[in-house]
Image (cartoon, rainbow, N blue to C red; front, side):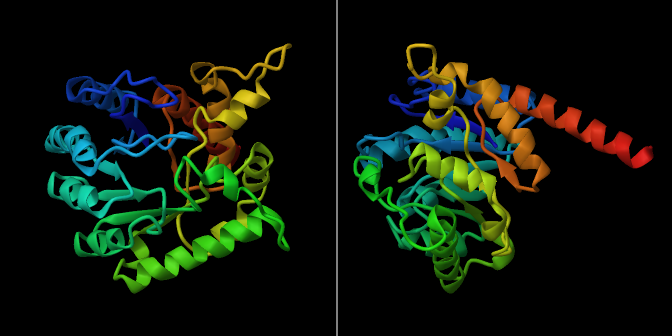
Length: 271
């Protein structure tokens, strides 16, 4: 899943693709690099981000989705709003990637169901400007058990709204109301979440916990554009444990690494 941020304040690309023409061109480049899905979003969810108006989000994403879908791309809309999801599906999107899992706007579940879209429910506790206040996981089983249980509740809500189980995908929500150690704990033990029985999408690309891992001698985090190699390494490990999708910014390096993994697995089978 290649990331197309149509925002002026993205943490990863600084608004490089904020206008429709640039975003469409970027989507085409990601497809050429091997993306299976293009995830088009018009609202930054970086820590501390404030929300755009609905009209702003619509103006950002609908022209991009329409153009890319018309060219045959499988497009996902990254939104928490039912109005944007409905417009995106009408423009040709086939996946609704909702980082709030329906908590920010429960009507989005019914929109996804009515549109027969694949629906991605991410683990989420609060909007970006407040989510750091909710990064506490003190119960039995820690963050893994909490995320599993809260995602199970979101899956139940999605099914109750009419989303077919075969069109439901879950996402552990790395970085959303989670500190670095929470992200690593989840990545080390995705099994309990996978045991819920739904495909898993993971978005680790360029996130701050990787920047912290790669900090320099003066403890300054590596900037986002310097985190792609670490993202790719993590993507290979995630592929080996059977995740459904990898949401990444640098599609080419991820696709190349997965080809290496496939070649090795094929060689082992033939040996």
